Image (cartoon, rainbow, N blue to C red; front, side, top):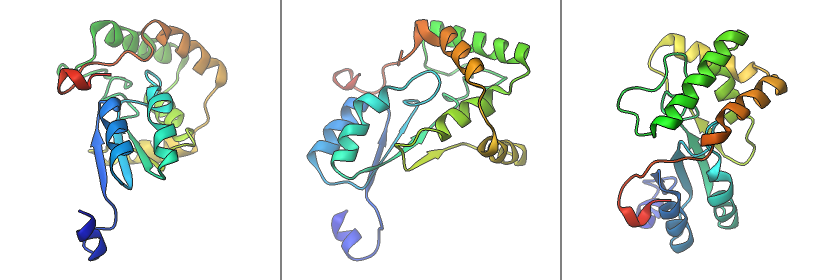
Length: 174
């Protein structure tokens, strides 16, 4: 890959994945330019901050944060049936959605804004499949978060905060 980069055929060399333990091991072992990880920094989870960012910053690796909506969990519609999160996490996300409805707050906008405010990443990657999604994501860029609403959401999430699900080989689970 580095030869391709030296030949100008690739600008950056990066890795992507969910298990932070694996990403950290790779980042400490070989030179890479970027890491994309998902569902590791949002309203439900922030372990990327403590498990990955120090290593990435030490090695000059830029990090892309993806899935600020926790793979659809932090939306009005809620988690898709295939979502791998434990039921307790799904239940907490449903409680968060209900709280936001009662407060007249757009959960997706608040969740994205939370991620956009995180200063340690190079970028936050958001998914968009419709023009409405594009419009809503752009709107989230200019949104402001009410600190009291955020505090109340974090209290709802607290019992399951930083709960992750296994992915890949057992020895790589966080």
